Image (cartoon, rainbow, N blue to C red):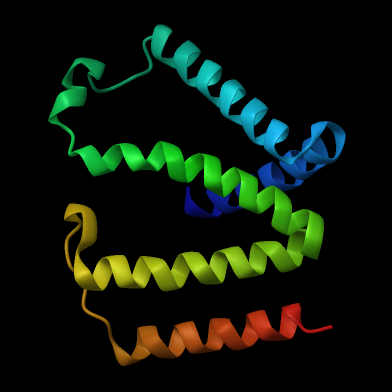
Length: 138
């Protein structure tokens, strides 16, 4: 599932970038969010949800910041791909995700179970950064 998610993210970024060239950066961000919201609504109305929207008050306030981050992510991905190309932008995005994910794991932010940081994990991040540098250097 994670690999499929990565494939879809690269395709989404490419499609969003093409849309941004056609309609503008902020406009593309808006359209992508609307299409995503409509798709989510259709899936919920089709009965594919497994939770309950009636429990929205039980979620901590900060969990709703994901919506704001979603807008920022789409906007920044479209801008990065337009500036650096799909492979370079995706490389930088993945490196940023892995470093941030390691921090979230280590500190246990947002209620996730803490995962210790190991020498091997640190070495893996360093090697990823070196690989990213090779991909990003021209």
